[in-house]
Structures are given as C-alpha cells and as structure tokens.
Amino acid sequence: MATAGHVDHGKSALVKALTGIDPDRLPEEKARGITIDLGFAHLELPATIDGHPSPFHLGIVDVPGHEDFVKNMVAGVGSIDLALFVVAADDGWMPQTEEHLQILVYLGVSRAAVALTKIDLVENVEAVTAQLREQVADSPFARAPIVPTSVLNGRGLDELKTALVGVLADTPPPGDFGKPRLPVDRVFTLRGIGTVVTGTLAGGRLRRGQAVVIQPSGRTTRIRSLQNHNQDVEVSGPGTRTAVNLPDVEDSASGIQRGDVITLPELGGPSEAMDVVLEKSARLIGSKAVAARPLKDGSRVRIHLGSANVPAHVFFLESGQLCAGERTLAHLRFESPVFAFVGDRFITRDWSEQATLAGGIVLDPDASRKKFRTESQRRFLEQRSGSPNDLATTIRSQLTRDGAITRKDLLLKTRFSADEISAAASRLVAERTALVLGDLIADRTWWEALRQTAMDAVDAEHRSHPEHPGLPLNQLRAMMEGQLPSPEGFDALVADLCRTGLSQAGVTIGRTTHRPALPQNLQAAGAKVRALLSAKPLETPPRKELAPDALTQQVLRFLLQTGEAVDLGDDVVLLADNYARATATVKKFLRDHGAATAGELRQALGTNRRIVIPLLERLDKEGVTRREGDKRCLRK
Image (cartoon, rainbow, N blue to C red; front, top):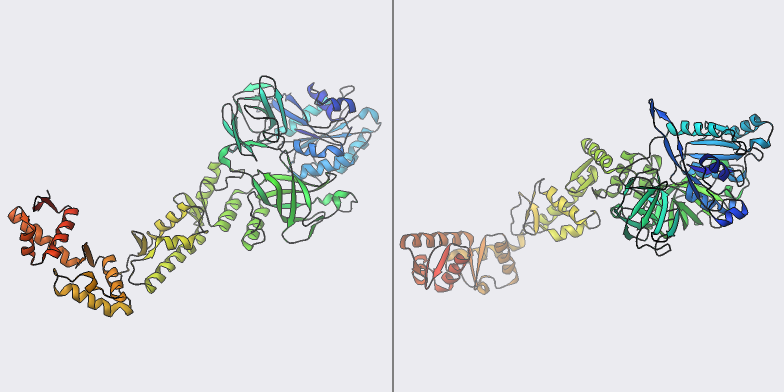
C-alpha cells in the first residue's frame, strides 16, 4: 500500500499511528516536518477468510506530498495493490491530492481507502465527507470507503484498519508468472553486510543464493540474503516489500541506484526506445493548471517507470499534440536505456518536474526507431493498445507483425508465465492460425506465403537452369535473410519444404519430380559428348578431346553432377552405366580366379592401361577390391 495526498495532510503521522513506525527517516524530514523521500513501514491486519484466521501482511510506502517531491512519490507507487488517500478535513481536496489521484489512475491502481484526517479541526465531518465523495465520483475510487480519523485521540484508526481489510479481501493475490522484477527504490550500505537494496517485488520469486542481473547496466551478481519486513527469508514472493543484500556491488551509479531493476539474466535486456499508448486525464479538461497544457510532439519529458526517472523525447504517430481527455500512440526515445515489459504503466512529467502531463502503457518494450511509422508497426500497436493485458491479442499481434519467433523468445518481456504462453500458443495452433516448426512458432498465413515464395524460387531455378539439380541452399538462405528470426528458422523452412514436394540433395534443394536435363542451347553439344562416351565404352577419349570448348565443358559438368557420368581421375570419364558394367566384370573375374593382376583385368575388360589403372584405384577406394602386391582380390 502507498499513501497519497497533499503536503501536511498527515500521511506520515497516520502511518505512525497505524503501525508504530515513523516513516520519516531523514534528518531534514524531521527538521522541516514534511516527508521528502520515500518512507517504509509494515502492518499486520487481522482477518478471517472462510472461517480461518488469515492475516494480511501489508507493506506500506509513505510518499511525499509536496509538489517539489512528486518525482519521489511516483517512485514509490509503481507496484502497489492499493492506495491510502489521505485528505485533511480542514483543507479538503488540494492540488497535490488531485495530482496524486491522476498518477494512481495512470498507473492502473483501482483499489483505495480514503482517510479523512484532522477531523478534530472541523465541526461538520459529514459535509466534508460528502465533498470528498464528490471529488472521487468520476474516478476508479468512487466507491472507496471514506473513514474519518484523528491521530491525536486515535479516533477512526480501528475503523480504518477494518476498511483496509475489506478492500484487501477483494484484491486478487499478486501475480506470480516466473519473471521476478524488483524496482529498486532505496539503496544503503551496512557495515559488515555491504550493499542492501529494497523495493516491491513483482512478477515472481527471488531466492537466497540466486544469480540475478541488475538492469539496465547488465551487471550480474547473486543474492546473499533476503528480508521481508526485517525478517530473514529464503524466498521472497511477489507483492512483498523485499530487501536484498548484494555482495560486491557498490551504492553508486556504476554499481546500483534507485531506478535500477533486479531481475533474471534470461529475461532480456534494456532498450533505448519503446512504443506506447499515452493518455491525458479527462479531469484536466477546463483546467488552467500547467498539467492541462497540450503535450506536444517532440517534447523532452521525464518518464517515471517503476522506480526509474529517465529523460526521453516523445513522438506521436499521428497528431502533433496530446490534449486533455485524449489517447494516442507514441514513440519514446530515452537518453539512457530502460528495462520494461509489455503492459508496464508509467508516468510522463514535464522536463522541470513541475507537472504530471500524461500516463501510458508499454506496447513494445524493444521498439525500433526506424519502424515506428511503418504500416505493420501501426497495425501491431493498434491491436495491442485495445487490449494490452490480453494474452491471445498479444501473441497474435506479435505473430502478425514478425511472422515467426522462437518459442523461448515468444512474449518473453510480458506479464504472462511460460505455461500461459504455451497454452495460448497451442490454442492458436488448434485453431489453425499458427503452427509450430521445431523451435519456431509462426503465423500460418505468413508461413505459407513464405514457403510458397521459396517454392517459387526453386521452380524458377528449374526453369532457368534445368541442368541443375535444384536451387543452391546458400542462395535460398540469402533470399530469406531478414524474414526469419534465427538461423534455426531457415532449417525449419527447409524441413517444411521437404515435407511438401521438395527434397534436399547435398547443397541444393529441388522438386522431387525434377529430373535434370540439358537446356536447349546445350543439347547438340550433349549429344556429341554422349556419343564420344558411348562409342568405345571403356576406351573413352581424354577430357580435352571429350570437352574441348565451353559448351561441351558445361555438358560434361552436367553429366558428372547428375551422376550420368563418373570421373575416375587421371583424365578418365566413363558413363555411369559403363562403369557399373565394368565393376560387375571385375567382381565376376575375381570370384572365378581369386586374384588377378591389372594386366589380366585389362584383358578381361577389353580396355587399355590408361583406363584400367584409375578404374581399379576407384574400386579400391570404394571397398570393392583390395590390392595385395601386384594383384587384386575381392574385399571380404
């Protein structure tokens, strides 16, 4: 839970009255009497669920209310389950109360309790309560309980605790999808222990001894120890205030600082650009506040995401500005890398940190600067912006834009678990809108079009070069470059082609029905070469006589590549059929005689020494014969 409300409305005093813990920890806070930075406390609320005691352990983030420290306030409310609105009865609804409400709405916080403080300073509490109810009427907190309180006499504190239990009872447990992220909101060093960081853990569990990475720096470390509310634990779960002791990490910009994220190495890296949907609160319509001014295209702003505060420029897809009550697609270019997931919410404030201008949702955490205005990216963002938390929509949008992706990378930086993603992908496969090919999952329509493109390329190769067995795989790979997400994607494509009427032969791929044939311009030269090879089957002319020019050399290469002819080396080429008959003759002679010299085999074949020696050496290499001295015998 995080507090929210105007400066000097009693937020810290109320937290201390509820918990016994003073959240103001800085000497300057004590001296000035106002909260400057985040304060922390915890509260155990007795509760009974289904007849069984089930207390709520509530971590509390106390935020500053002064307008100069709203940036610190935003860092504390990024991962909360509910808000505690604090409004002083003698002041009523004030500017920072309104700004805090808008911030919470932008961040998707939908549950709250309202504490009406300092009721001892007013006579008509009911009238103030009614005014307060009117202020929240058109917000997600319209039905939030409003509890009059006074920390001076303790009035209303028990009723406030009861109201908090009621709100928490309707709050779903924090999601655990196996992707833990701890946005760091506090860093300090303890003598003998080292660097300790705290934050509100979201998305998964962290364990003592676990290897983690600090984003956006990418620095790896391990968790030495964990605490929840000053208690050592082995495992910390989502939704808990968590303290992590990190060895060998300094409390500095080069080590770790507020705004960093502790997460797992396998969850990807940071990005310098994101595509988002931005909205500006309709509550600003008619207001003369700085926050109500239109946010203009190209503006330099500050983006508050998690506990981070990062400078960025904002660019709109269509309009030149964003006015109160409007919503639009936008592109953020950060001045330093940011680590985020799809569905993360953030706050946009002006460069001078004087006003909250808008809120937004991350749609593409790894956006491309060049592709923002492309039609495919527009469709992708429009599809996601309508249902940013819908799993099926998120998968379909990615497959529609990218065509295919490795299954391990599918929706990696999202708030969905691996099991949820796998089940949703299986449903798409069952609906025949997607298909799985090895490690890939692909949009079926896109894949079938890609496969047809490859088949058309193979057919074009057969038409233009009928003498070739098929299209060289390196040429096909070059054609597909940039269309497949990984080298394994090309292997999956070749495997799929081989299931649909094509076959791979060495380094080429072609139709299984294709039989290499000489093109029209080589047929005359082909007839000439075949005639020379057939005239005297085992006394063929040397290669220079067989193929004296460019055309006949092309023919000879074709005959060798297709296996119609056999190159025995030493300038000897035979037709494959003649080579097979010669092999059969040698085998029969050796079976009948046991062993024979090259001269004896030459006579049996009716050929000459120029032919028989390379022939017998080829048979030795193929394991048909074995040389023993000056004789050969059949190999057993």
